[in-house]
Length: 292
Image (tube, rainbow, N blue to C red; front, side):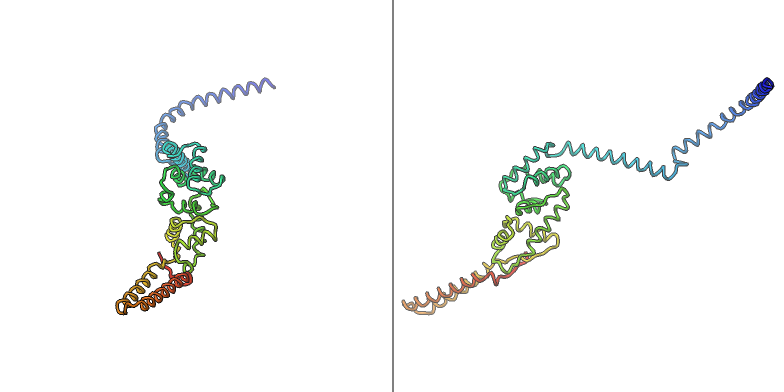
């Protein structure tokens, strides 16, 4: 029985081999005939992306963008590293800020100095600020020059500063700090800008001077926040003095020149001068305002 099964299997194998052998030739011929068409299809698929799914296309585009971004980022970093005007060393940058802090009597704390230094690596604007601190100036007013004078005025005028690496946020901090000061100014109570600045420094423990005060004022003005400033009364009182002089010149020309007459005129002049002085002393309650 087992012998018959073996013989049957052998016969079946021989038949299959014979059939397959008869088909091999035609199949090979068919493959050779179809080869040019298959090759043409593969080439067209590569060129035009035929048969590629939308997901595959999106993935390919993302890969391309990533390669381009990586190339641009690398080039930018290489360029910045090559052309940065500042030393790469953190300790050297820190020394620049610390020296400026000491030279201009700024009130930056150690923590604020470190924050500025760290920001100079992440922000082009802060990098420029640190570079500006490294330059030589004949006076602090020269340091205020430039598009970021508002920031330098802020650092100089406020005893306590808030420093952030985000420069747009830093600009808002400066604007809000200046706005808080100017919002509380009542210009009619001060005879001059200098008197106003002194009062602000006494009240808010700030370090404004005329230069930083006007930089802050112009900065707020450029952001659409307009405030009235004290108006000097020198011209106003000067005109009154001129009128007083003309009055006594006229009296002296028409009156006699006796001793009693001159004494009376002198007493009248002194009285008018004293009245004008008293009026000037009261001026903080009656001063005008001026929009600069």
